[in-house]
Amino acid sequence: MIIEILAAIIATVLGGLFPLIRKFAKSRFDKLYAKGRYGKFHQSVAKLLDIEVGEEKSFDKRLEENFEKLQKAFEKVEHATEDFNELLREKEASVLVMKEQVEVLSRKEENLKSKMESMGESPDETQKLFEESIAKMRKRNARRDYAIFVFAVIFSGLITFLVRHYVNV
Image 1: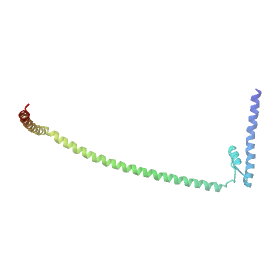
Image 2: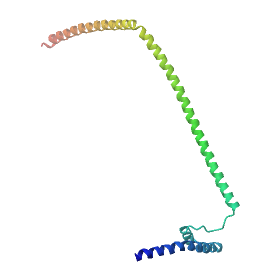
Image 3: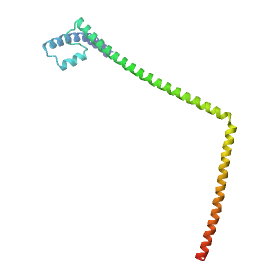
Image 4: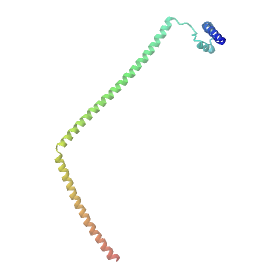
């Protein structure tokens, strides 16, 4: 219980001393800054205590800096807007190209559909012509096959005769 009371007293004292320490450190760092002796160690301590050291800026100076920041931000936004518009133009151009391609393909599809419909109207005629051409090819192939067979029989007979006559087998 005594430790808890002691911890509460220490926390209260330190909590009350922290603003005093910040105030004292700020006045000390401002004096060092004015003399030109403000170093890295002092910057680290000031950052740790969350103290801004340096010249106090006037309202006009701060306003001017904020306007400069605003102008830079506006330029960045304007540049981003231009980039975005360029991207939109590119997308629009690609969409137009795709639409043209779709139209060309639609026309081709319609053309092919009309051809298929015209072919579908006369399948009997087409089928008859196809069967006739196949029948002619079969007749030609049959004649060729018979001719090859006859030549093969004659050739094998000739070879047999020559082998028996000259080789005496």
